[in-house]
Amino acid sequence: MSEELHRIRLSVNGVTREVELPARRLLSDALRHDLGLTGTHVGCEHGVCGACTVLVDGRPVRACLMFAVSAVDTEITTVEGLTREDGSLGPVQQAFAECHGLQCGFCTPGFLTTVTACLRENPHPSHDEAREMVAGNLCRCTGYQNIVKAVERAAELADPQHDDQHDDQHDDQQSDAPVEVQP
Amino acid sequence: MKPAPFAYHRPTTLAEALETLAGESYAKVLAGGQSLVPLLSMRIAAPHALVDINAIPGLDTIEVSEAGVRVGALVRHADLLAHPDVRRVQPLVPEALAHVAHATIRNRGTTVGSIVHADAAAEMPVVLSLLGGSVEAASTAGTRTIPAGDLFLGPLESALRPDEIATSAFFPALPAGAGVAFEEISRRQGDYALAGVAVVVHGESVRAGFVSVSDVPTVVDLTGVPDDELGEAALAHLDPAEDIHATADYRAQLVRTLVRRVVTKAREAAA
Ligand SMILES: Cc1cc2nc3c(=O)[nH]c(=O)nc-3n(C[C@H](O)[C@H](O)[C@H](O)COP(=O)(O)OP(=O)(O)OC[C@H]3O[C@@H](n4cnc5c(N)ncnc54)[C@H](O)[C@@H]3O)c2cc1C
Ligand code: FES
Ligand code: FES
Image 1 (tube, rainbow over the protein chains, first blue to last red):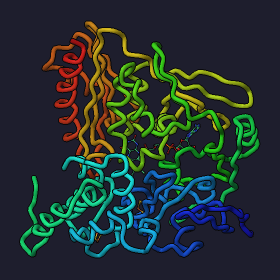
Image 2: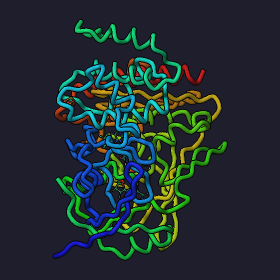
Image 3: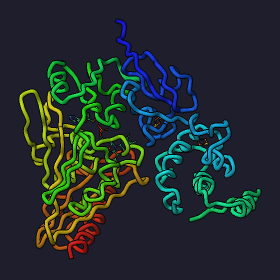
Image 4: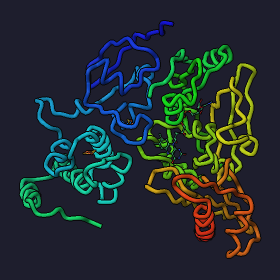
């Protein structure tokens, strides 16, 4: 039995692309296989791990819990869409790199998209709010301390008030000294 | 794991959606998909067709009046939680919603979908029951109001018929002088609760709703029960189950601890 295919347009990272796929194609698979955007990772495929998180109309959602056919009429942003126009790293990406917020990197795309959207809504999170922002994403490697630091650093980087002095202070903390663990 | 093939419908009016649903032998409504898509991916369910209601205008409204809060079928948990007036009229709704999954799931999952999914481990079915709310259901035959008391039939089984779409849910307002509180224990903030308790105190009346400790969302009247007997009185109506996360005894202990704590908090809120 041949399966009915749907010809749809998806708007991803500001580019509209036409794809033909069955209704059961998950958005995560459509991004990776049909559009070649393999930055979006797939872990559990039932909404628990967060590796597949993308932004739909600016909000983080699980790409494995949406069908591509229901994503028409939305603006999708994947991790590939978080870099600046000139190809350099966006503030959240920069902060994860600086604070060692990743090890194997499998979970990283989901953290980057989630944190990007959360900081837009709450640009100055408290430590607890920073923890809460990443609570829905699983990381098997890092123990989360550096991820939470990266959230706080990203808030600094994205803040237009932040100045070089801030940067210097921060660089001091980025030595090889053991990371400060906050309770 | 991937879903089995299905026919996909994306109606743009409620009437068209109801016609389509009535014409299919085994169709499911797709709202937020946060519970349905995992079931399809694991092939626990394999409907012939999905009727995606996301393109139907008018289902995403929240109406707040002195009578209560009416929530349309496409209102996402996150939008209900963020609504500035809901807390004033019915504070139990946002208090419980903050415990529904993680923010990312709340961005897509709908409150009405969660209610009709009728999971006894979910917060909002219990809240609707405790508050004596209701669901509006539409089919090609017309519309009807299903009181929460008649809605939850069994595990993951609601009184909604296969040809019906729930168009909204109604949470009655909190009467003056009443107090509410909600608490749950989960392994991680945002996970399904090991046990959760919602309480409404109004004058002498004390009623509690229990999450994750029975097969169906359960409300128990605890009016007149002395504080140190609240736990046992509640457990007489509950049937805590054992799973990989907690033994039945541990769940019972959570009920004893939580119910007392939440009743106290609800009394303070009422005062
Ligand atoms: C990782 C994870 C954690 C979660 N944790 C929690 C939690 O802690 N607490 C909690 O309560 N929930 C939790 N959820 C579930 C979440 O709250 C969902 O939003 C909710 O269960 C279903 O809403 P939905 O809109 O996604 O419905 P869908 O998944 O689209 O549908 C669920 C069911 O309801 C039916 N349905 C939906 N809307 C209608 C309608 N309008 N008319 C008729 N039938 C309809 C569907 O056909 C389907 O059978 C979690 C989900 C995930 C993935
Ligand atoms: S792959 Fe989507 S949440 Fe795990
Ligand atoms: S860095 Fe390896 S899973 Fe997070």
